[in-house]
Amino acid sequence: MRSGNMNIKQGENMMGYRYVIQVSILVSFFFFSGCAKQAEVKDHAAANRPMVISEASRKMIANTSFPPEPVFAEFNMEEYDLIEENTFREAISNPLSTFSIDVDTASYSNVRRFLNQNKMPPIDAVRIEEMINYFGYDYTAPEDGSPLALSVEISECPWKKGHQLIHLGLKAKEVKPEGLPVSNLVFLIDVSGSMTAPNKLPLLQDAFRLLVRQLRAKDKVAITVYAGAAGVVLPSTAGSEKEAILSAVESLSAGGSTAGAMGIRLAYETAEKGMIPGGNNRVILATDGDFNVGMSSDAELVRLIEEKRNQGIFLTVLGFGMGNLKDSRMEKLADKGNGNYAYIDNLLEAKKVLVKEFASTLFTVAKDVKIQVEFNPAKVQSYRLVGYENRMMKKEDFQDDRKDAGELGAGHCVTALYEIIPAGLGNTEGLKENLKYVKTGLKPGAQASKEVMTVKLRYKLPLDDQSKLMVFPFENNFKSINETSDNFRFSAAVAEFGMLLRNSAFKADSSYKGVFSLAKQARGKDEEGYRAEFIRLAELAEMLSQREK
Image 1 (cartoon, rainbow, N blue to C red):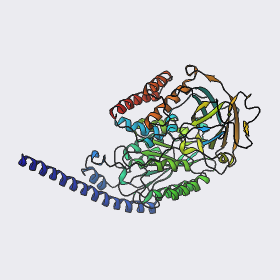
Image 2 (cartoon, helix red, strand yellow):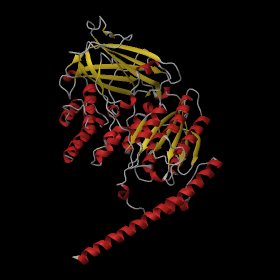
Image 3 (cartoon, rainbow, N blue to C red):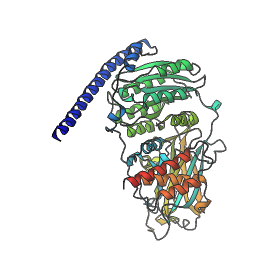
Image 4 (cartoon, helix red, strand yellow):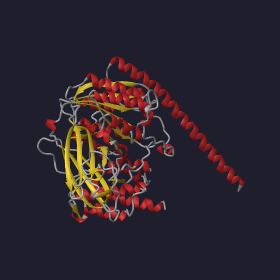
């Protein structure tokens, strides 16, 4: 037995030695290739010509053996911001709820990635508003030249008996392709060593091929990269020159450290050189978010992005990969850059974001969109906004045009849900403010009013600095849940699913059975199969949750 144990131990040691040697070779390779990359990028930047990887480098990469990807799978350095859920607030003392709209969808596709790996997602990776807004909804389009239209439904709350659910649906105007402004795009691509995995740079290249095919002749594109240094791979090039653009995308390979901030600076400089007044001037950052060299603090990056945003250059962020995904950083950068944040976990998601939703992803029709709801305490005892925790605003911010808020692309939909407790025995002491329903206690007309709330929207047109106001009073048009639209029921199913994944303090009687029932009833046409996929993921999550009990 001892001899057998010694042989096993020796075998383990040999495996360990092989692993150390293998890792040492890999580290040496990335060090030298990173140095070569820096020199190559600097030389390219000076010559201002497309950067092409040499044939010798290609052969070296092709003939190099790498450790299998699972070696690194145990080291999870992903980062997510803490989410503290919105709680119930009494309408008599807090009648105003103010938040910025959110059209990011990254959380849903990231959650899907975890579930497809037979893992439950981290709690703070689950942002319920992004999961809801991943899906399209059949809302009424704007009329009379307005860029926005609002729909409202009120019904019973599926997960809490006695409570009600208010569904707000915001729809941006559609714009035909010929009506979209000319684009000045700068692709900022992370080619650092952390992007070597198949679901990073190779997937990124496949995704950008899809986007390039959507470009019109009048659009123009530049490509910048960053690794140990930053450089221009392709100067601003007409959209008609697709072969040149695709060739530049194909030439990219990964290696070196991550000078992300240097790359962002260069991308903005490139966008400024090609600035189109009144056009769609935008940097598209594709990365895993791991900025570990140079100006890397969030505060410095945010200040730079805000400065460029105010000059009319917006930022879209596309996240790739796993293991070291810096989700919290990428979401923050996109929000501050008047853009959106999507996570690309497969090629079909790339097609959804960059082809099917091309206009809504890249063309803004309204910026700094804020919603403020004033609840009538005679009808609503207390309320809770489901999700949007990192989008909440002070009530004073609603009228302050200096305060940044979310952007809406052409044809975009935004959905928000409020869980409410209908008025009953409540406190009648309140704020002394100039409000519609509350002064000192309830105003005389509040009890008699049929209005349950008033919804106010503020937005700016893409080139304006002054906001416009829209006001919508709503009566209590309560329906049973079976009478509600597919929009209402499906969004409620997604919200309930999100609360289960988060093990929310407000999940009440939420259940996977309830999620399936609502979602299957509200599946609708589902031409792209996104809702059917949601049902499959919910079934998978239920099995995984039972395994963990």
